Amino acid sequence: MKLTRIFILLFIIFYHPATAQQGVSIKSSVDKNKILIGEPLKLTVEITVPEKTNFLSPPIDSIAHFEFLQPSQSDSIFEGGSKAIKTIYTLASFDSGQWVIPAFVLSKKIKTEAIIVDVTYSEFNREQDYHDIKDIIEVKPKEEKKNWLWYAIAATVVMLGIMYYFLRKKKPLSPAAPAPTINAFEDAMEQLAVLQKWGLQGKDFHTKLVDIFKLYVLRKKNILSLQKTTEDLVVQLRTVMQDKDLYAEMQQALRLSDFVKFAKYIPTAEDDSSAFNSIKKTIQSIEQSN
Image (tube, rainbow, N blue to C red; front, side):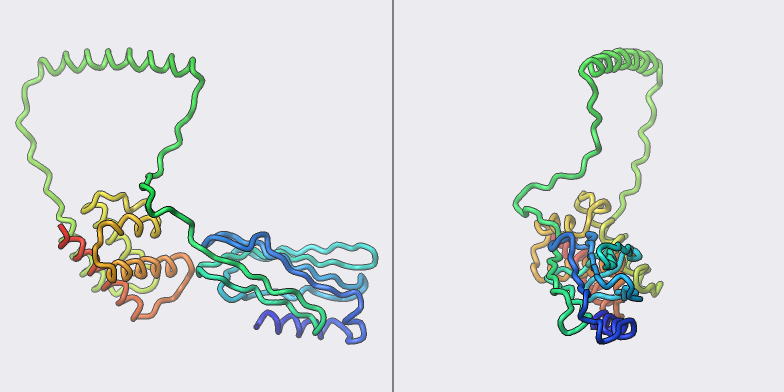
């Protein structure tokens, strides 16, 4: 791989072959072998060389299936005639699966072991009822609660008295005209047509496409879709959609949009068209099921 070749090349430049096997070692490790998609992972690479050797730690600039979240941090420690160069990389992966951080090779006998990392989605129980996120409730001492309760009762009595006084004298008003009803389906179809005319691409296109879909779900099914992650929304829509094939297409379209928005994936025109058609058919299917 590219990073392995860099290690070999720089090692040849800075080391004389006669000293390559003397007092030189390399080891690598990670702080965890199983992470969630997007969760930070610390990769530590430590190279030990003779103290007087002119050696620079080779940089790592790419690892398949992983992204570098921030610049690496290096430190050198001198002890017992040796110099240990320790470099820490902060990685993340947006591809689910079992991936391998390859061995770092300095020579035929001086190399690390490959590291296996499992990248998964957050676990959830599909049979368990959904519980929405609630605000933080501040816990106060019992005495303060009692005082607050008495203040609330007193304020309520005062407010009721004021309302009774004004309502008794107030003339009845003519009923207000009802607010116009928003047709969620027609509005979603109109927005999709506008999106198609705009010719947006990449992140802008997929962000607008998902916003249209979530707003329709909120209006049509009263699901608080705007605050939900893709995985949470997919779970709730499973009971709404009867067409399993279309349900799978909808999941793929939403996850593709996540990759474009958060993992810097560059979609093709075919990807955009497929995601657009899947979302449009899903809206039509939900509308027809009522």
